[in-house]
Image (cartoon, rainbow, N blue to C red; front, side, top):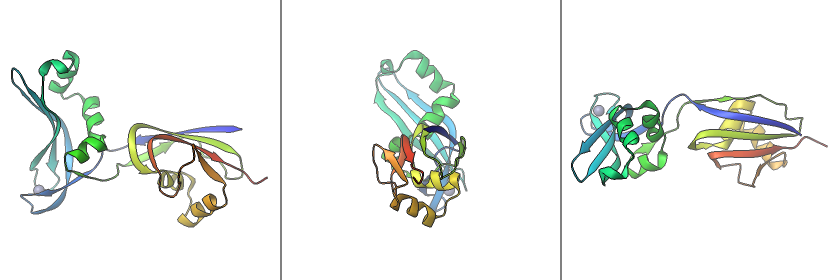
Amino acid sequence: MKKVVWEVRYLSVLPIFRYCKKCREKREFICSRQFRINAQRKSLDIWLIYKCSCCNTTWNAALYSRISPQSLRPEVLEAFHKNDEILAEHFAMSSDLLQKNGAEIGYPLYTINGENFSLNETVTLEIKSKYYSMIKVSSILRKKLHLSQKDYLKLINDGKVKSIPEADLHKCKLKNGIVLLFQADT
Ligand SMILES: [Zn+2]
């Protein structure tokens, strides 16, 4: 059986929407990829700084609150001090953490790397994601395979696509990745 692997490549971090006190409206907040660190002898706070896309008002997403400075490895603490890009992206892609901070989260921009295939062949498709993602599997499949909503529903209803393990392909999210089986007509 043919095996195909797709990799979701993110072109942006998660868009954040919040009420901006200065604009008096809900705005998109842009990740500055900079951390704010407040270190005292016994307690450490770290935030990721966001800025209103219209007025630059800052909003800080709390990453660590009142933790012991010893609880982070020295190289990790150093990476926060240096505003390490990879570390910033890791937190800026963490929907769970940002939601806990009271942010409303949108979908990141993304492309899908990998080979296309015909719906007339039997294929195992693995979709990989570097980050836990709330993007719908249906959006990814429709985008990459150029399927209309109607075509996609027909594929599910005809039993020509299933996920392993089985999930509801009308609404399931990518999360850490998924394996799908496309069954050709016999
Ligand atoms: Zn604003």
